[in-house]
Image (tube, rainbow, N blue to C red; front, side, top):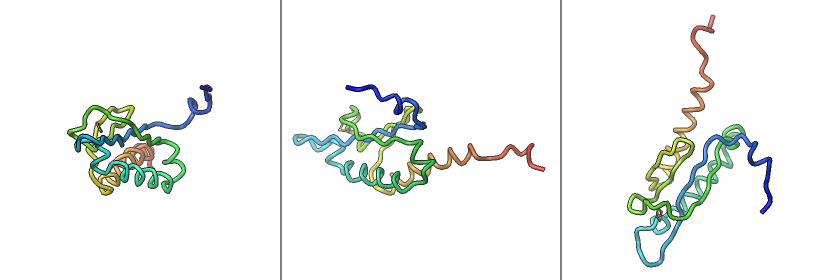
Length: 114
Ligand code: FES
Protein backbone atom coordinates (compact mmCIF):
# COMPACT_ATOMS: atom_id res chain seq x y z
CA UNK A 1 0.00 0.00 0.00
CA UNK A 2 1.35 3.38 -1.02
CA UNK A 3 1.09 6.46 1.15
CA UNK A 4 -0.69 9.23 -0.73
CA UNK A 5 0.51 12.53 0.70
CA UNK A 6 -2.03 14.53 -1.35
CA UNK A 7 -4.97 12.83 0.37
CA UNK A 8 -3.70 13.89 3.79
CA UNK A 9 -3.40 17.51 2.67
CA UNK A 10 -6.86 17.63 1.07
CA UNK A 11 -9.63 20.11 1.88
CA UNK A 12 -11.90 17.43 3.29
CA UNK A 13 -13.63 18.61 6.46
CA UNK A 14 -16.38 16.03 6.80
CA UNK A 15 -16.41 12.27 6.31
CA UNK A 16 -19.81 10.68 5.87
CA UNK A 17 -19.87 6.93 6.41
CA UNK A 18 -23.02 5.18 5.20
CA UNK A 19 -23.51 1.55 6.07
CA UNK A 20 -24.36 -0.46 2.96
CA UNK A 21 -23.89 -3.82 4.58
CA UNK A 22 -26.37 -6.43 3.40
CA UNK A 23 -26.82 -9.70 5.20
CA UNK A 24 -28.53 -12.58 3.50
CA UNK A 25 -29.75 -14.10 6.78
CA UNK A 26 -31.27 -11.21 8.77
CA UNK A 27 -33.52 -8.46 7.41
CA UNK A 28 -32.22 -5.83 9.84
CA UNK A 29 -29.13 -4.93 7.83
CA UNK A 30 -28.96 -1.45 6.32
CA UNK A 31 -28.49 -2.89 2.85
CA UNK A 32 -31.79 -4.74 3.14
CA UNK A 33 -33.43 -1.38 3.92
CA UNK A 34 -32.19 0.27 0.73
CA UNK A 35 -29.03 1.99 1.95
CA UNK A 36 -27.10 1.26 -1.24
CA UNK A 37 -29.66 3.19 -3.31
CA UNK A 38 -29.41 6.14 -0.89
CA UNK A 39 -25.61 5.92 -0.89
CA UNK A 40 -25.56 6.21 -4.70
CA UNK A 41 -27.96 9.14 -4.48
CA UNK A 42 -25.74 10.85 -1.90
CA UNK A 43 -22.67 10.35 -4.09
CA UNK A 44 -24.54 11.75 -7.08
CA UNK A 45 -25.69 14.78 -5.08
CA UNK A 46 -22.09 15.45 -4.09
CA UNK A 47 -20.92 15.23 -7.71
CA UNK A 48 -23.39 17.91 -8.72
CA UNK A 49 -22.70 20.12 -5.70
CA UNK A 50 -20.51 23.16 -6.05
CA UNK A 51 -16.81 22.46 -6.33
CA UNK A 52 -16.10 24.11 -2.99
CA UNK A 53 -18.71 22.01 -1.26
CA UNK A 54 -17.84 18.70 -2.87
CA UNK A 55 -14.17 19.12 -1.95
CA UNK A 56 -15.08 19.45 1.72
CA UNK A 57 -17.09 16.24 2.00
CA UNK A 58 -16.01 12.66 1.48
CA UNK A 59 -18.79 10.08 1.22
CA UNK A 60 -17.76 6.55 2.06
CA UNK A 61 -19.65 3.26 1.91
CA UNK A 62 -18.99 1.25 5.02
CA UNK A 63 -19.61 -2.20 6.35
CA UNK A 64 -21.73 -2.82 9.44
CA UNK A 65 -21.46 0.04 11.95
CA UNK A 66 -23.00 -2.11 14.73
CA UNK A 67 -26.22 -0.13 14.93
CA UNK A 68 -28.28 -2.33 12.64
CA UNK A 69 -31.63 -1.93 14.40
CA UNK A 70 -31.38 1.86 13.86
CA UNK A 71 -30.55 1.51 10.18
CA UNK A 72 -29.99 2.57 7.62
CA UNK A 73 -27.34 4.48 9.56
CA UNK A 74 -24.91 7.21 8.69
CA UNK A 75 -22.18 8.61 10.92
CA UNK A 76 -20.48 11.92 10.20
CA UNK A 77 -17.03 12.90 11.40
CA UNK A 78 -15.43 14.88 12.95
CA UNK A 79 -18.66 15.52 14.88
CA UNK A 80 -19.36 11.83 15.40
CA UNK A 81 -23.10 12.42 14.90
CA UNK A 82 -25.27 9.48 13.86
CA UNK A 83 -28.35 9.64 11.65
CA UNK A 84 -31.06 7.30 10.49
CA UNK A 85 -31.40 7.90 6.76
CA UNK A 86 -34.44 6.17 5.34
CA UNK A 87 -35.06 7.93 2.04
CA UNK A 88 -33.49 10.21 -0.54
CA UNK A 89 -35.43 13.03 1.11
CA UNK A 90 -33.45 12.30 4.30
CA UNK A 91 -30.23 12.48 2.25
CA UNK A 92 -31.30 15.93 1.03
CA UNK A 93 -31.91 17.02 4.63
CA UNK A 94 -28.43 15.82 5.64
CA UNK A 95 -26.82 17.79 2.82
CA UNK A 96 -28.87 20.87 3.69
CA UNK A 97 -27.61 20.65 7.26
CA UNK A 98 -23.99 20.93 6.17
CA UNK A 99 -24.80 23.66 3.66
CA UNK A 100 -26.29 25.73 6.49
CA UNK A 101 -23.14 25.28 8.58
CA UNK A 102 -20.97 26.54 5.71
CA UNK A 103 -23.32 29.40 5.05
CA UNK A 104 -22.67 30.51 8.63
CA UNK A 105 -18.94 30.57 7.84
CA UNK A 106 -19.65 33.12 5.11
CA UNK A 107 -21.71 35.31 7.42
CA UNK A 108 -20.30 38.78 7.93
CA UNK A 109 -19.66 40.12 11.38
CA UNK A 110 -22.27 42.86 11.90
CA UNK A 111 -19.66 45.18 13.43
CA UNK A 112 -17.81 45.23 10.11
CA UNK A 113 -20.85 46.37 8.11
CA UNK A 114 -20.90 50.12 7.49
S1 FES B 1 -25.93 -3.47 8.92
FE1 FES B 1 -25.79 -1.32 9.03
S2 FES B 1 -25.19 -0.94 11.06
FE2 FES B 1 -25.23 -3.08 10.91
